[in-house]
Image (cartoon, rainbow, N blue to C red; front, side, top):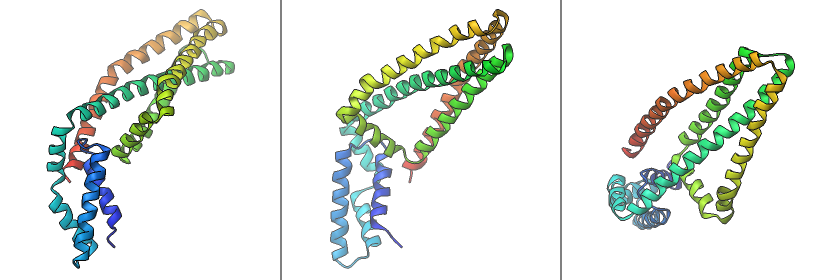
Length: 236
């Protein structure tokens, strides 16, 4: 059975995913669409027929987005910079959190007698598990709807408490986590022998080198995947 509200929501989501319209633009377009649908329904058409005709009269989403992109150039680049800054901040927070959790876990494992290369391999494996787990979670959130994520992020930025959290809370948390990480080498240097500590440093250095080589390929793959996904959505 045709659901008018769901159809309008999907139409709006498709238009929002093109990134050319502001929230007020989308509200105005949706209002025009609903008015047109109501007018057509009063003339005797079914909700589904009225919706299809109203959408056609309003124009193709690609054309609408193209016209609004000319008007909202500043807003478009502002949103892009917002996402770029959010991505950098998110990566810094993720790295600090992963290093802190891994460091605490590795320090705890020393009580069971694990030393040297084994300790280094365990640290790398823990970092990889936590990092890819978070990345998988983010991927699921993005697949569930990028426009909803953008709306949430915009809502946080527009909220006074959200701005204070971003400005003070997140940087302070990252700094605190970084300070906690300083305690790991100090603790390990006292708990294990210099030889075991040297082996640990060699393994973790190899892990960091591997990650620095792998990260550009992962980012390139993510960019291509997101571009293809956006292209499929905007072609609907």
